[in-house]
Image (cartoon, rainbow, N blue to C red):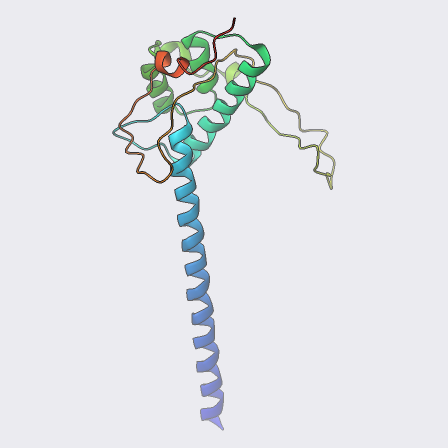
Length: 182
């Protein structure tokens, strides 16, 4: 009678182990997909570097700022200065990434140093028209960016190729893709 109980425990442990191995494999595949998507996103943000790849969070923050800059330029129709562009892109980024942006856009890094005022200009919440809130969200507000900013247009590398991070994109090159106003 004892061998049957021990045999049942062994089967249970084997099944549990198999489930865990499968779950780990699924999670590993999910993370590979996420990392590949972030590599593709890094090709589209206006900052590439030869020596250091942006972290996941810095990539997402820079992409958010870049989208905001594109949105702003479409609404305003104005071409801002490199400083305004750098200020828009650097909101909420680390000092290291901000310095890389300043170097890329040829502006003084000290002009982009984070201040408590600038940090408050980040969106604190996004509202989606199709979402139906299940609880009160009145305490969440969207505070738009206060800095004027231009887009950064450039030819991203093919999604199927290795980004390499060797092509730095300067402001003048980035703005060369901007449609000229009549």
